[in-house]
Length: 444
Image (cartoon, rainbow, N blue to C red):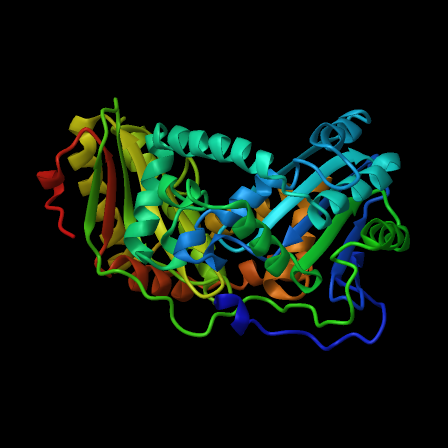
């Protein structure tokens, strides 16, 4: 599995605490579990997240969707609490709790008043560390997940991104649905899910992050108390380092995929292989993406929506993983306008690749990247997420000022080089809408 090739930090002999960038602190427990916090005394709330470095790419084909299945099940009851008690204890103090699963990690989080952080720590740690996974709950949530999968298929604007991702990565775990499929979820047993839970949800794979009006030492004490006697209160172990991957992720030969759906709009994504999140060119790509299709002033938005009114929604994006990435342009438009939208998109990509982008556009793109990043750190939830992702995905916390400086340092040559590399390669096209397989010269 990919996770077996991940690096690791030095083995801690005892509790170790270190001050990180921007005043954040990290404590590593002997079990390998890490606790990272950022104190924001001016707030009256706190956000807490239990982040597990396991996602859908860590599943075998037969267990596809297991991580997402677990996300549902861990709120269904522990040896201390029923499902109702888990939700009621947080809601009784006006808090909120939820979870989400990605390709590479799973997060369980809560947001509460600062005085109620001890309740959030106890409830979330209990749910993640000591879930019963009752057979009856497995059957109930199986039905819920199958309905979720069916509902997703009724949202063509979402489905087209999954079709595109599968067209790029094929049978590789990155190409599979995070939710799994009806074929993988239906036969999955309680014992299989429980085994996955106990093998994967281990202390070295977990980061607990908190941000808000808090004290780091107090959070550490609360976490240790909440985990005492659970499976996460284990012996000495090394924290699992950031996922690296062992070799290049295989991708499919560029092609076109059409999913025929009786929809009012045609939904399409045109794009190809991108770059991973550890690639130094990610800063240049961020600037390029904003200029191309990142906002209302972007080239694609102006050309396709503002000048011609061909689509309500059109944008570009980049998805980055530890060892792979993709970029794409999405548009949703009337079926009769799909050909024109595609022609305009291809023309713009070719123009950017051949001519590059202007200094004014690069300056605007840098401003958009910096602004969206800093403005996105205005609440405790986003600050908590930044801490956890930095620790889990990168192994350290980059100071905000350094990140902004890295964006400022991007040169026109770097942006244009990335554009030339990405936009001149053969493209994959995914389409969902009322079209026949032959409408776009599809082949598989």
